[in-house]
Image 1: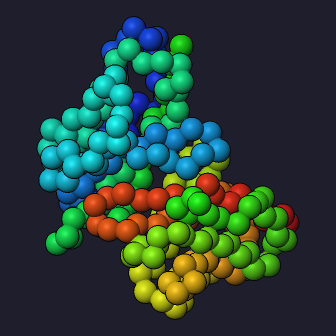
Image 2: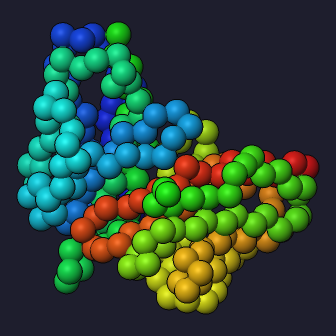
Length: 116
Length: 111
């Protein structure tokens, strides 16, 4: 299995809702990532987990809360989002080499989030 | 100066032609270089990785790296309409998981 899966594919939420995005990989990768991508822009890194520990937080607002329950799963908990948070949210995974995560990252299909 | 810059698009080539996509990067300590293809509304797909100077070929794709010139390119031979997509150049300085992306070049291959 060489795939990263994400659920849901689409999500519409109000500004007062709480929702979660889920990501799963079965490639034995020990680094997982969350990215945000707006239309016609490149992906922006949000968080990096290495061996289930948060290693990078790119100063993301606290309304986004990541969680890595095990080596295969990555969640992104959403609360009190703003309309400008509407975007494609991408999960990626990679191997971890001696010095840290390999940067050959493989992306999931993404969750298209709309905040009303 | 941006970390990673790509040649401004869009790029349009006829079917069967060679498409040439270029990318320059600003940090000389960059170690790893990647090309991702992204179809409209889809997620990025890794198509090439290159780590040392020279050429790396995979099917119709050839990546070229010149660290002295801080330049990486992607050539697509025998371009097909299915190659029409945005191509993202990504560069890494270390193994900490951070990729620096260019803004992408939109390629259209017309029949």
